[in-house]
Image (cartoon, rainbow, N blue to C red):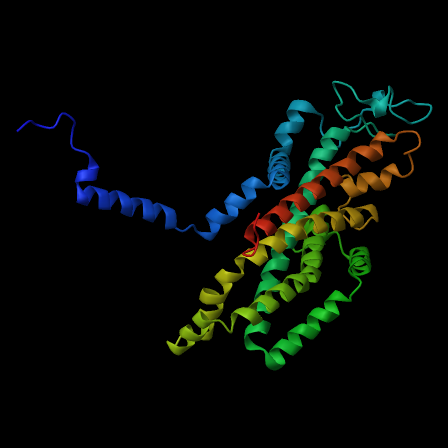
Length: 334
């Protein structure tokens, strides 16, 4: 009998054929984690990715501000009177004195480097915004999950406190508080006191927004089957709150935190504009805008540059926050 001219294929091997079929089925039904699904959605959102890249860039700029200024600018509080027209008090040259030595020009009257002050101003804005968001998220998560899980008079009490704080005039309170604060407080001096107060007050008045979101999600989750199963197995309240409920609240908390940061940046800029922010000569975007009000007709660039910095920063955070919200939405299709 003549031997076969071609080699043995997997078609004649039932075991190999079954293994290949099993691999194909496994690959087709293999599930993805929530993180993988969210990242896959986020990668398809080009605007969100662009916003995220800008956010990372701004954070790196704030962290390495001294290095960047030493390479490309001048000390932020150093005066350069030789760059100022002695007759009109405005920067020499066009566009606010922009040149290779002063990339964003110089401030009217004193000649400080606008580039350096914008870079250092990013530190103040991002520091206050991030720390205030952390305070708001921590307080809002704790009180929101307690109100939603326990219900009854506990829920009513916390909800009424949230309503009261939401109706409180936050800006007026900060302005009045700053006006009576001493220069030294708890080991902090000067602008350090102002930054600590801004973080504490903005975060304290911001937690009810997070608390409402967390409370609503907790009211829905506490009736789920896995919570009932944990209770039936004898799990305590602390275990259910922080091991069962809290991990399922990470997504909405993350989304709201990313959307809260740009609001905090605008709040800090508004307070600095009104004189309730950091003390001069510490650089701040809002403070620069406030000073530019009196000189914008003669030197519009001094108002445009910090205004654009605020606009780009807030827009980047909003785009990234919207993308994170869409990526973490379980009902989303994007």
